[in-house]
Length: 104
Image (cartoon, rainbow, N blue to C red; front, top):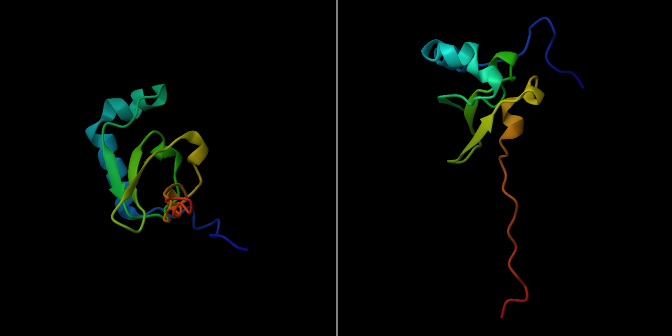
């Protein structure tokens, strides 16, 4: 089972990179200092790019990831998420709700 070629590097959508760079430019004090002290992001980035790989630069950023329906899953990136894809943390299916058989 193969993955992406190593010489290509990880896939990240260009629009997602632009949004993260815009966040860094609009909130430079959070980007350089406060996010490493545990503060969450001052803005939320909305994306539909589930195939994008989480880079170390995305640490402590908050994303709304599209899950296929009208809902968006809220995700704050932690160190353990780096290297995984955004779509892994936004479930696309709901657990089935069964009817109660004993209901009278």
